[in-house]
Amino acid sequence: MTGERGTEPAVPRQSRIERSTKETRIVLHLNLDGTGASKVETGIPFFNHMLEAWAKHALMDLQVDAKGDLDVDLHHTVEDVGICLGKALREAVGDRKGIVRYGASFLPMDEALLHAAADISGRPYLVFNVPLQRARIGGFDLDLLKDFFRAVAVNAEITLHLNMHYGENLHHIAEATFKATGRALAEATRLNPRITGILSTKGTL
Image 1 (cartoon, helix red, strand yellow):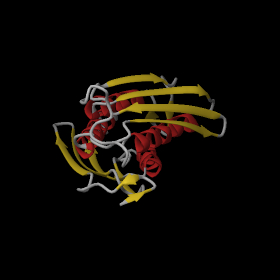
Image 2 (image 1 turned 60 degrees about the horizontal axis):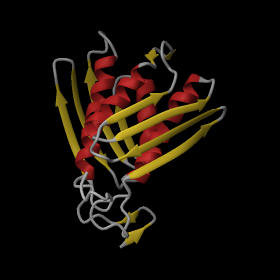
Image 3 (image 1 turned 120 degrees about the vertical axis):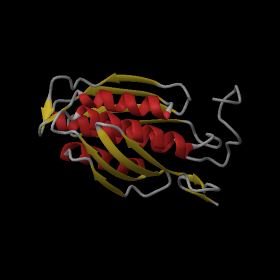
């Protein structure tokens, strides 16, 4: 059976990741072939909002229950959720057979324009040209977003390029980054019935 997102997978492309350390306790569930539904609780309202936007535009169902040492710092929770999301993506994609592999998205949000490009390559790499350093929104340090996306890329074993073309409003820039990444990954993980095996001239990734 085919649909607008490609072939229906033989088995559900879902994963459940648990991570427990002295700093955080996280349970994350991901469904690649969802509708964008989300239930996210990290204890960080702005971060919740960003993850919900990511899921909606990725058309992936996402559940996150994260408890961290927020009284110490937000960094542990943000990075560890990125680790879990990356592991969930890697596990749900499976052997990478039949996926489009590459995906990209330009995302305009009012005055801001962001671009995300992803390769489900098996080679972790992050390029992050989004100037959010030393800025805060609602008590959230925006420089944590680079750590988050690095954790996603490394643990998902993907190549991810995030570039801001222009923008002024920090909320617009941050939200567009999450939405663009979601849409790029939606394309990259999509199944295409014309692809047999792995989309690589090497035959492996």
